[in-house]
Length: 497
Image (tube, rainbow, N blue to C red; front, side, top):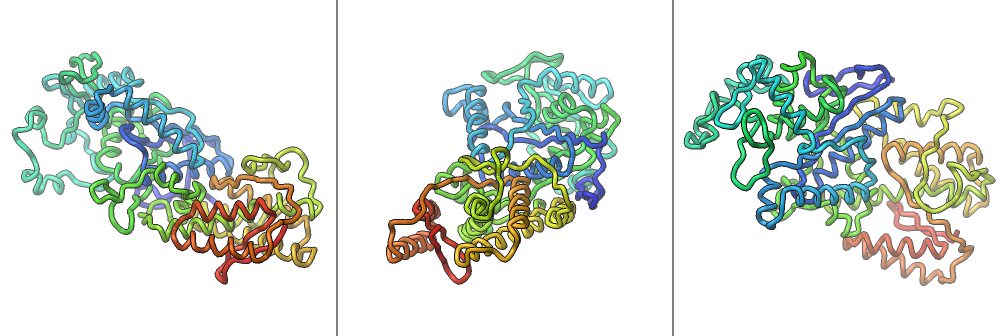
């Protein structure tokens, strides 16, 4: 069950072999902090969060770094509009980033370097490039001579001669920056300061770094010359990641990354997400609408991470239903464990409130569910395939719970059911799917059958109207009364706990 990954650099799937056995150095190109994070950011952050979790699950020690771009034209423009400062804008949206990611259950990275905190490393890297003939100054700016790097284009597959065709129609020859360059393809490493902009002193004059050099410097400073995984969205392959390779590899003489992984983009109802189309959705807007964060995670994980994914009301409704199925399975032990005579103890499996913990102990015997999950996911992080194992476990636990309620005993032994439940909790935890535990003391409900049916009908109307917050509220209200709802293709069934 060797882990294999699709490598954008080689355009093929390869066995995963790290620079240092048992350890993974992973870098994700993070967000430019000038606005609230949107669905595209949610997908990327969930994907890399789960990949990190999975690598840890199969035994790797992972050092995960994610940067913040906190100096950029977009940040400066927002600061100007708001009569604020670049630092104030960046700090505000970094704070918002952590709030949004916490709601989605994203584990924090080991470190979050910021471009403005890496100026010394950036200047050192530009100086080394200049010494090797891969940087030239021009009136306070510093540029990278693309044609000097013979392997330019190896990540994106683009060739300079192909890109040059028709380029003259798109170039503004009167642009001062264009006039400074020796070649139209050259890109900026250091920008001369403009009046009123933040600037740092350098051998080439006061200025600020270009975007691409920031990541090269942060990778090198935090993780070294060669890392195992460099991650980001497909929109970063060219020119950002291509330029990172050009900058880093001519200085170190080593590969920047062994594996380049890229997540697909998010569309909304089949169209590219953009503010002009009015389909631009931030993470907090979506969650404030009442969508369960775990449903968002499930929505992301139902698609292969490299492919585009389309967001729609129907898609999130399907993910919400899927999450309810898995959630029922996750709560199985807390609903029926005592009846089944389980010894949950006071440790990892103790009853309480909060989120279900992931067990820290290894399985004492071979576990076919874990083996199937790992065999599937090892094929280029096939999380949709891995989810089938979770749904199989959750549905079987739901079925056994119904049998227990109506017949007083289960078809499967309590020991095997506990093993299945613990397996589900563990594998769900690998995917970051965690259910809130609500332990109730109700033994029976004061509601009549007719009143329960009326509330179920209200919930059905809420679901038809895409009012998921109201739907969940009614479900939780009934659960608090000791009434468990079971959704299926044939409708909604219920029973008193």
